[in-house]
Image 1 (tube, rainbow, N blue to C red):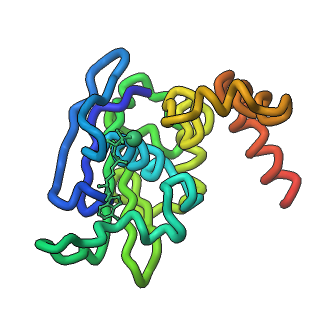
Image 2: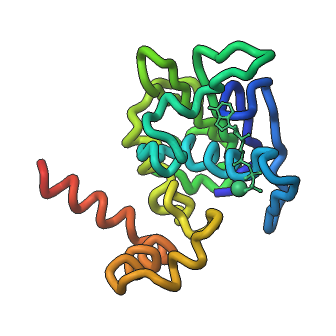
Length: 183
Ligand code: ATP
Ligand code: MG
């Protein structure tokens, strides 16, 4: 499952529509302090279904919406879209009818988050599951957050195990088992 494009609109400091092409291989983000590097990574996690405002450095999820500056008014919504190459048909059943997957998450202050995959309304859960097995989930070790290396080194064994399970791509199995046990 290869990420191809990331589009942001009204997400944190990315008030104007911004599109990034994600090339093959390793991607690095460079720039001066405060230019939005961490915001970009957060947008990627957010569109993959991250639901903890603290992971977005906010108190509530609506804090990801552009809050306004002295010159520009705040926005009413934030939207992030992620385009994924699915020519190898690695997505779970039900999402494998096309070469491309476009996952969109939109949040408004009043109505909270809504998700779409290829234009179809889906639940947050569906988006999280889409990424859970590909070891690309919102908590994936493939995305290294600022300060995360130090956290890994200092982690207790149980927390470290969770990180390794995610890296091995088996955390989706645990999520499905947990859901099955609840039914
Ligand atoms: P560093 O190199 O210091 O880690 P960075 O490139 O990672 O910096 P970010 O933390 O991504 O920078 O961006 C911080 C900027 O984003 C700040 O200027 C902050 O005001 C702005 N920002 C964050 N949330 C919002 C929001 N909801 N609305 C407007 N601007 C925001
Ligand atoms: Mg940063």
